Figure 1 (tube, one colour):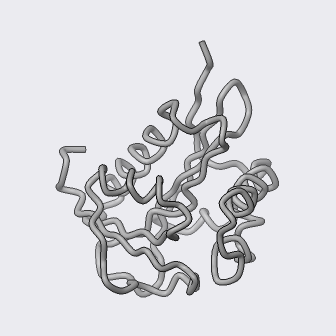
Figure 2: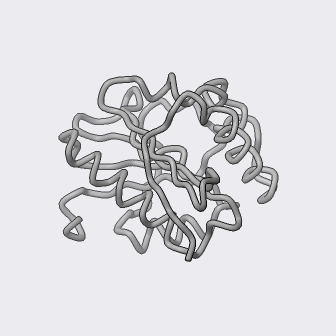
Length: 166
């Protein structure tokens, strides 16, 4: 049986996480400009998540960094709303429950930090992820919220944290 671990991001994770995120964009032929792919913070996620009321969870399978997901107080979001960010999985980690565990951990963290809603941005190229978000209680929005700087994202979703009893 594979050993799964979920832990907070460490500085030594930066290179592996940036590679995992960028490889996902390449795999799905998703836009690189105006997305997290070209965002300079992607190369130093540890520092990004030192911001108050943010957290990045890292998932390992058998000691290999296999996914990540976090909560971030993106500038311009409504009060008590944070963004679900940096949710990526290696192909080998999909369909084994790691993504659901990472997302649930992030949602639990958001609640602990006092957030009432979680917003996210995605791309049509990540349609399987968007379906998972819908199944997890997120609903589509007609326009973006906040100032993520990721202008190429065209899927915007929100979820009230009182939903689904998490």
